[in-house]
Structure formats: structure tokens, C-alpha cells
Length: 364
Image: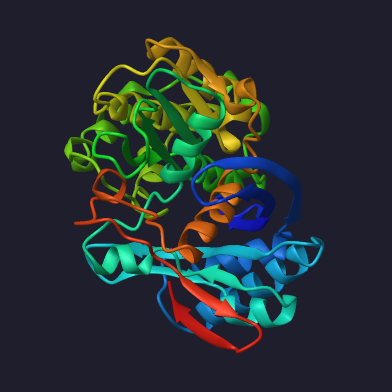
């Protein structure tokens, strides 16, 4: 039994979930938990975004370690923990990737081996370091008995898409997976409503529903060179920070509607990269709770768009479950990324395993 933990770019809190797996098949799902960040904690994390070192990064590091220790201490009987940490900066073609949080300290505090630092090896070998959930998405496609190609669409702070062809035996087979970030998702909307209205999000798409998409701003957004790049490709949370500038003259509702439309447009552009038309798109992450965003996707795509709950999965916990699954793969020496998911030159089993008994950090 493995316990996975995820704190995403939406900065809402720590998701934790148990998965029973051999690192290849999903054998079952266990308990889940959530530890929300307070407003003051969220402010600490926001202050550290985009930074690589300094007191703000140290404060975020300590906060993330403490919050995860509190969240994960609620679980008993787990054999291994997968700890993603909090991404503060992501620049795979430059300074690398930075996830803060002390995996060794968690291991010693909880008395369980912890797998962490999942992304660094992939980046060091020329990969994007993201997205990392696709190998788990392949296992999910097998678990639900999918027969045709399908897509998993995660709409967190940043959007990412995984195309899965379940006709292959394993995720590392050429053609089994294609994955990449589609563009900004919830982060720009969250940042705008926080700055203008003091709200954490556009809950239920209330503002977007009352607004109108400004087509000029949308066209400028889609002119960004990122959308012409072939995948695999990835983004930092702040790579499209200028989006806020494109809507600064708009009223609140129109600005939110336009940013929501940009998220949907990025997904639609990304779908053009799929090797075959998918039979369906299964949506995970907070964006699936926004009915305006979901309707934008449904009217723009030529296949059913559904929350992952439609196939019995938990869209709030899928990424935490992914890192439980990936932790087992690392511990068993199995790859966690491949050329089709991150653009890395060869199969990579990234991650560090920290053992509480020896206090040692061992490369995975």
C-alpha cells in the first residue's frame, strides 16, 4: 500500500491518497485526505513562486514539509510514501525545476520510506520534467477497461493533457502515451479574482457565466509561440503571467470569462497533437467543477468531455494517487517517464528514496 501526496499549482492544499499497486497495475484505491492551506499559508507560497532561493523559498520549504507531515500522519498501515513537494519554479531548458519540501525529514518523522524529487533526473537527461502523471493515467485506462484511445485532461493551475492508447501492453511502449501542458488553466483566474475581489477562485464559474469573452485578447493569447511548439512541452505556473495584462481593462466578469476561454482554447489547440481522435476526454483537477469551462470544452471538441468520476475515478485525488503509484515504480526500478511524456532521451525512473531507519538518501 502506497500513500501519495500532492500540492499543486492552484495552492489550495495537500491532497493525500492511498493506492494498492505493484507499480504496473492498479489493484485498488484506499483512503483519501485533504489538508487545506490557510490564507496566510497561501500567501507564503505565493511570495515564493518563481524564486529559486532566498528566505521566501526557505519559508515555503518549511511550510510544505510541516503541512505534509500533518496530512500524512493521519494514515496508518502504508508501506511507502510518494511526496511530490511544491513546485516553485520550472525552467527545464534553463535553471531546472524546483520542488520544495524535505522528503528525508518526512521519512524520519513518519517512520516510513519516502520517495521524492521525482523530476530532477528527467530534466538532467534532457526531459521537461513534466507532466509526470501519464504513466499512472495509462494504468487508469487499463483499470477502467478502456479499449480505444482516450485523453486525461488535468485542469489545475496549469492544464496538462495525456493521450493514452490502451492497446499497448505498457506505458513505455512507443506510441502508448503522449503528454504535455496545454497552457494556463485555473491559475490566472485565481490570481485575478484574488487581486481584484479577495476571492480564492471563480467558484462554479459564477463570474465567467456573467461575462463575455474578449476575442481580441483571446487571439493575442493564441499567438504565443508556445502553442506552435510540438509536444512534449511544459510550463511554469507564471509563464503566461502577461495574460492578466490582456484583460486589465475589462470588467471583472468579462476578464474572468476571457481567462476561462483562454484555458479552453489552449486545450483545443493541444488536442490537435493527438495521434488519433480520442474516444473521450476525462477531466480531472479543480477545473472540472467549473461548468462554464466544461461547456466551453464540450462545444469545441468532437468527443464526449466528462469528469473522471464518470468512470469511477476521483478527480480531486488523481494526482496524489499518481505519486503513490510512481513511488512504487521508483522503489522497484521501473521507469516513470519516457520520450512521449516528457521528451527525455530514454526511459527514466526518477526519484530519491529516503529511509527512516538508516537516515540515508538513495538514488532511485
